[in-house]
Image (cartoon, rainbow, N blue to C red):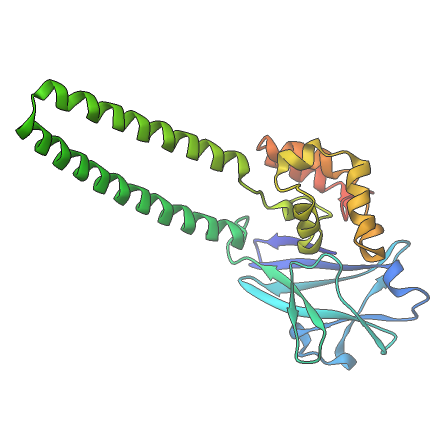
Amino acid sequence: MIKKQYLKSKSLYKVTFSLPKEAAKDAKEVKLVGEFNNWETSNGVAMKATKKDYTAVLELETGREYQFRYLIDQQTWENDWQADNYVATPYGVDNSVVVLPSVEGVPVSKTTTKTVAKKTTTKATTAKKITAKKVTKTATAKTTKTTAKSTVKPAAKKTTTKATTAKKTATKKTVTKADDLKKIEGIGPKIAGLLKDAGICSFNDLAKAKTTVLKKVLADAGPRFKMHNPTTWVQQSKLAAAGKWEELKTLQDKLDGGKRK
């Protein structure tokens, strides 16, 4: 699991890496190795053992993505179970990835969303202009052959139909829009994909889901996911769905990997 805290005074991120003890049973030593130390195992960051996991803290540059893995007893490699992303390597395994945004409080995904929204708005505006132009030409042509009264009524009917159709389409898109479930502490890219496959795509979907259903989704995915505890996901999702981000942050500060400390 990865926790990030932006240090404004240093313009760096304080990143806490943690690996559950279930992933390294009876380990004598666990090290954090990655691009931040040129993958040198001899220079790996020794992780501190606690009751539940192994942890290590690093201060890393913003606006970067770092690949990393955990090295257990200088023999076994393990990925972070809730990394921001995973990248395939030429050796047939994946590396974990931690993403550190360049702007405080604005994840990379939000930037992408704004860009897409802008493009969509531009296309919609262009389509509206073209439609208006066609309607004008049609109205002009009909005026030449018929009276102004007969021309106005069909045009008004078509415009209303198009407006109604557009309204229904817009409503449908709003309802089916998916949310970034990774904003819920305890949910990483892999688990977000499992929930989506189960039909849980938005904060509202997750807020209405029963804990027993969530546990079954994790259990069906195998032992790697069965150990996760979804008991706070519903509460977090209700706050996210209501746009109560400050309250959500306060709650998440009291959690450890999505679980109550």
